[in-house]
Length: 559
Image (tube, rainbow, N blue to C red):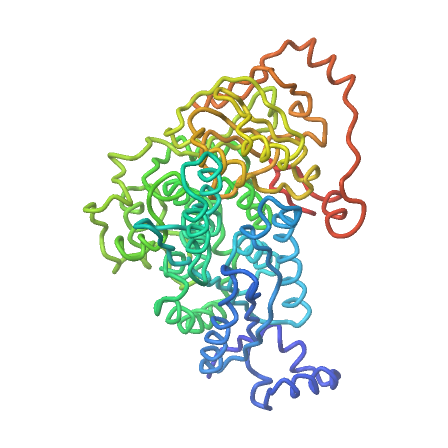
């Protein structure tokens, strides 16, 4: 006799005093025998206005067909998404990070109100992945995440392209390094179809981390969006959700302090996005696990950078799939080296170590992943900086290619738009520290990403000659000598609000410090003259976000 696994849905289907509910379930196509089956919510971040998400509904249908064959009931629903690539550098970007909370809230609402017994979530773009993870932790019922997969690379003039190629192309065009025709062809050929941005940007960073953390099936993070492997994964998910239901394995059984560390370590080894910090602080909070900025620095001090992946390196996620054999090959290697812990439970019902037993060993006749003994950098590229500019912490992305120390004169902008104009008009001098402020969680609002200015800097050839600091954040595609998440932010009266043009700023990524080199008396004088700016938004969702969001060092959560 099959074990009863409809622990939640039976509170509706087995209750005789809910005739309207039963009538509606019959209307969905359920039969009498289905009322005793477990119900699975199949949620995707599908919408057809973004390549990262436009194929997710099709994946959901494959999952649903597989669910039915396993004698389960599957109900598809969707939640929102925001395309970072489309909104980047516009006012729409203010909704990107806040969309993470809306995604979590909406999934929690549907699953809890409809009493689904388990969840299979199919995210695509950046904030989708942490958004669904937060929801699954709040609900804490058997769940699996299937990553929508990475986009194929574009191609033009003998070179591979990706989304960042298009941003950097504008900087090259403005400095006459490429023609207008070349620029247009790069833009047209950067994104050839469905899937998330191809480098080790935020979506691939989070997918890799969650696979190492055990919330995705092996190979989920590296199987391309249009591959046969991704279709097979969607079919297999029903096997594993049933195992999780039968064993009553829930997200909080899988997401532990050790598994979170596994996710962070893998992402740092691969040169992942600084957004990892914001998202894992939030994930840890909902898993009831204590995690602080200092934990990230401890991990970074111990972890070598071995991934030669974009934006700082040369390769894309598709190269891991084609030339390495998939993410499990890297995970197995890091297990062997003692960097990852193998006894953590995963969505297969087995440990991470058990999942890797039959995975091939890595070979080093390629230039994508370096040996631990001969890394690109002996420790992690994510640095947590403290100093008078960021007494509560800031997050830097320093691979070493830009150097590890920078001292220069401040060039201050109170908005991203002003900074972008200055860079494109070639008014930024070598040796400058660009300061972009009033773009934090409250000041932005929504802490928009600074991919445009960092891409323009790189495209203009200034990558090694200027630094950029901000109370905003960076895209996973950003690279250069950049420091974000400065806390307290300018809107809250942080010292970044008091910096003036010409002030000297020193950033030291070896000693993990960032300081404004002026006397305390001058700082005190400026504080007395500072007045908080008026809020940019006075109604709607972003107004609610301003009123509830926590600082960046706490993960920008809203409760």
